[in-house]
View (cartoon, rainbow, N blue to C red):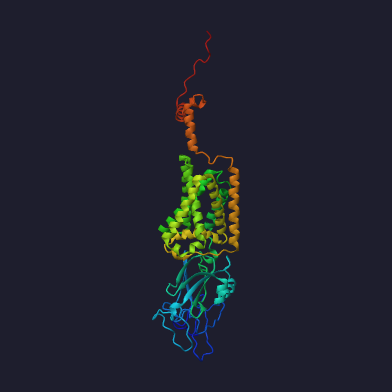
Length: 487
């Protein structure tokens, strides 16, 4: 078989061809081959279009085919980008196609509108059978409308390139429908799928997404979060350490990722180390200064971060206004800062609520290290926005399937149970434990002023140490006569 000429063929995982028929033509032939001659599984669909239907990709000026109805996909760790060529209005057999860019009137291709759809494959299913069976659900216009989620509509004046948040290991099928509002007709581009990962990679491939270091890190984090969820307020120092760890680890991971090219495992190890430093620093600040309110406000900021992340995880985050970085970060920061204000009035209750919400969520993250769940993207999408300057233009919709609803239930049950248990246990206790350093200072002042306290007459620690050293270094004098004299 001869190699087809440039412009008469296309090589891709999801590829399609559009052929114009002559008035007398009754048959058309296409040829399919793999680049390396191997056997592959696939499904083919033939769709006939009439002269009134739009012609997908007929105004192509970028890709090899003269008429290119394909959707081209590119992805990286942060975003997945799809691009397609503009369509033209329909025309009959033997007629010349209408010009694409000569006129912009209502009788030209500029009246066409486009709709972008998204269809999620079953979570955790990377099999060919699943892909092929689900591809059939988006094979034509009606199937796309019935089974897919409409992401957005655009006119012919908008760019035909869009970005979505990458979901490594999660299969997604993108479809585009072009409509002619004058003739009330439509046509579908060739659907394209991606898993945002490679099946051929020996490192971080689709079948090996979970690193051992990530599993260890989040397993330990999940166990600590479960502890904080139920007894965090009771063991206040442990809670402060965990909150300080999370706060510092998140900030440091952003800094080290943006400023260095270190290997992921090294970055994760350094992040854990700096998290320990942050946890110790937070505990020591409370131990030394005794300011419970300052520590609780930091805890409130963490809860505010979670609430703000949840807000933008909803469809609200896909509004066009929030694709502007300034608007997004201003609104995000406002929500994040407002939450700690309630802690001023109800510090204990706010601290316990944070323990329940954040602690239960770390359990979800621990589960995500072993099996995929979309809930991890509540915080991961915000992290991506910190790390990638262009992520703001990406759509961040994620699938909510059976495992996600199970994990939402687990999150809610753990969080509510932890909050109720801690509120019940702590209702008769002091709001917060006193600072050990402040207690030591108060005890020292009490001993100085209370002459009835036996410890008031006890030498200071330094005097006792010096006295002990003198006893060990001085030579013992002979005792002499020890018998008392009788007078």
